[in-house]
Amino acid sequence: MKVTVVIPNYNGRHFMEPCLASLKKQTYHDYRILVVDNASTDGSMEYMREHYPEIETIALDQNYGFSKAVNIGIRHSRTPYVLLLNNDTTVDTHFLEEMVRAIESSKRIFSVSSKMIQMYHPELIDSAGDLYTLIGWGVCRGTGRPAANYTRTDEIFSACAGAAIYRRSVFKKIGLFDENHFAYLEDIDVGYRAKIYGYRNMYCPDALVYHVGSGTSGSKYNSFKVRLSARNNVYLDYKNMPLLQLMVNFLPLLLGYLVKYAFFVKIGFGKDYKEGFLEGFRTRKAQRKVPFRMRNLPNYIRIEGQLIAHTFAYAKDWITRKTSGK
Image (cartoon, rainbow, N blue to C red):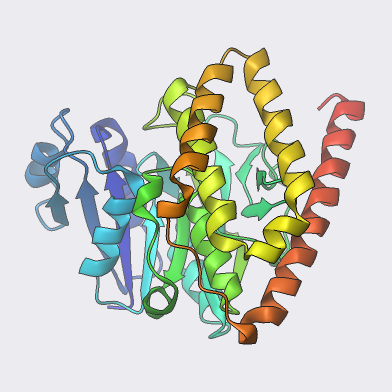
């Protein structure tokens, strides 16, 4: 086998049938499926044993979050590639074929992000990969844009782990997903680490995925998600930026945090954001920083340039959307 499709699940029984049915229709057949269940209480594992006894499952004793669940799946796999897939998705028949083709185009590619389309609004993009900015904001590229856009293969900052393929051997060099994150921003974190080590993350426009979105958390914004994301944002910057880079980027990062705080105050989640940020700042030194190596200096410089470029690209896109009313 060449690919292990790891599907993390938490109370997603109602999503499993369409997701697994779409995987059965793949033009590519050299893969296996592994479902890692975070102690679901909705009968997910009973459903899998009854209807899909041929699919391997790992039932965890509690909800450990996205990061630990997929790490268990990655450690359990033995294939050259691991493809992470959210349970609230269905995939195009050529999805796996295109993802494998993309990642095999270069040994320097760590991950490939698919073209995720909104399930209930298939004319709109859900994600065309992730970007990261100088102000510490992760940007889900293409969200809400017409699905006819983003038709070119591009280098991105990191793959959206909701539907992405990874080169398993690279995890041995850079480490797995950070389990301290639990969920949210863990995919940008691991993609950032890969870039520090000189690997690339790519976007494949021909690998189509239809995504419900917030299938586990239940909404775009809630107290749990806002607090966790704020905390993880601090971890992400602290762990991946050397001290000098943190000093250089201090003012734009501070501005980014303040603007986000103001936004969440406006929509009623200011307290959650503040508590998450303070928790992240208070516990940041307990996180494992990426060790600085002089040989990676060109990669740090390249990353800094991308952070700047992505900031201006995001600002341009935001202005365009506001002026066009879209």
